[in-house]
Image (cartoon, rainbow, N blue to C red; front, side, top):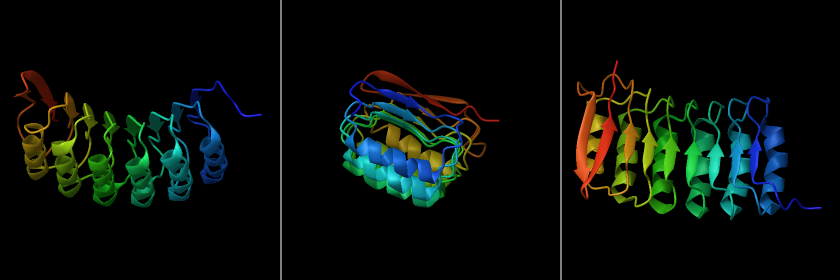
Length: 207
């Protein structure tokens, strides 16, 4: 019997690994009700991400995906990015604490350019540098849906911050971008700019 009522699944801190992800992915492919799923602090590696990505690409209901503090890496992020390109309902993605680096971030940025529904992305502590930040900046320029972008605790320097600053002056949907603890970003703690008469607070609360 297929489930017709489940809308949220919380698997946080349950030692979920790739094998479990493969099983869950099969169920997700036929599920028509699940809106939120969280794998926070588990053992999901690239193979698990690939299995989940196949299901995410097909989902017509999933709006929120939390894979924070797993072992996604660049390879897993690339698979998820391909799924995000195809998904038409996902609005929130949390990959914080996964060391996706610039390579994974660049793939995700390409997906952001194609996806018109993403509103919130958390890439806190993901070993992103200026290359990744610049890729995200290019995606932000053209996004009409993104409102909250978290890039704190990464390796972004003044170069990456400049690219982001240029992007937010073009973007009309972004309300918050967090670069807290990106220590090389610059000396300003808070930058306020105006887009379409709306005050946008770009947080640069540094060490």
